[in-house]
Image (cartoon, rainbow, N blue to C red):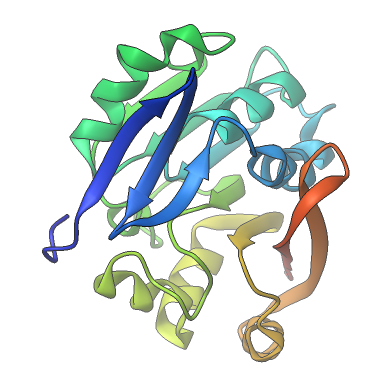
Amino acid sequence: MPDGRLLTLYRRHGEYYIDLDNEQLMSSWDHGSEEALAVLGCRHLQNVKRPRVLIGGLGLGFTLRSALAVLPPGAQVHVAEIMPEIVEWNRTHLLALPGSPLEDPRVTLHVKDVQKMLGRHHDPFDAILLDVDNSPDGFCLKSNGRLYDRGGLAELRATLKPGGCLAIWSAAPEPQFIKRLHMSGFDARVEMVRSREGKGPRFWIFLALRLA
């Protein structure tokens, strides 16, 4: 990783995993929470003709797959993934998983830090889905801390249309973060989801609507 931590991509018994410093980040076995991130963050856009969505973090592609299933044919989905190895893995080894979401004509891939796609100089989005860290206080990259402070939340808000949804995956409920979202001009709540069809470990999705 850019900060020297070790990211490991591997397959075992037909399942795919991503580890960071020997801690599992995600797998093709437990991906319900990644899918829930897309469903909860995009379901208000089903009847919007040409919604624009930004996804931060490609991972194993489950959030992207689920977003494409929810969004209409006219959607534009931009995916920012900082690690080119993750992109290459999706285009080669992960073809065994259902679908090829990166080949969908609605998708534009950016091999860059999602933070470089934020701010008033970018066209605003109807939804931003972030799955780049363990939580707003547990960063996979130290530089990601800027996403969740007051300045980062101001940039995220500026990159959303009024009424747009910011959805953030988290391994912890982080009650103080809800307060930070409210103070940054969002109507926010957190929803608990499970990793596998209503079973498995609990995770949390922060849902924050930009106030006008």
